[in-house]
Length: 149
Image 1 (cartoon, one colour):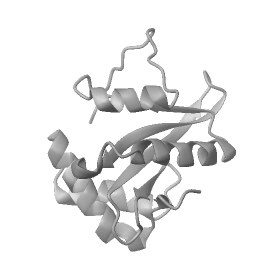
Image 2 (tube, rainbow, N blue to C red; image 1 turned 120 degrees about the vertical axis):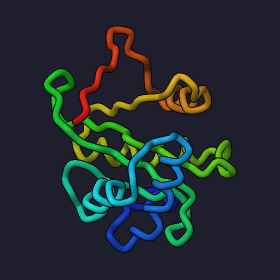
Image 3 (cartoon, rainbow, N blue to C red; image 1 turned 45 degrees about the horizontal axis):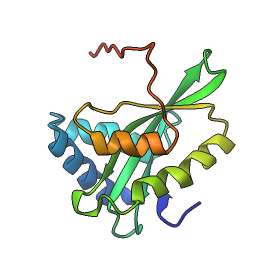
Image 4 (tube, rainbow, N blue to C red; image 1 turned 90 degrees about the vertical axis):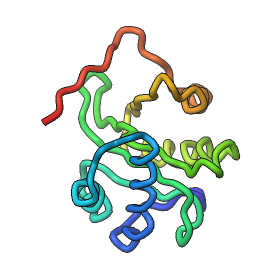
């Protein structure tokens, strides 16, 4: 795997949590610190339902990508969803997003992943362009609907 992307572990919590907090602030996600810790720390500890990778030098990462995993009958096996993908604003536009996906997707495929999904806000044209370049396509037959507790 690329030296750019590192699977985050419990020892990386002090690097991951501030990046997640920055992303939440930039997206106006109203999760408080305790709830954020409760969502992130199990992934660093090896929860099989998801994982987080740091982007950039391990000791001074510039972003992260968080995936969750599930099963799809439609796609014939294990699927993933990019839950959050964040690169610090001043670092964007240098190809790190493309390099991250180029390094991570083959590893996920080798691990048995058959589909990878994501949501892109309509305001994020740059992100949409990145994902299109990397082979992601809109599905005209779907409208995402959510229920939250």
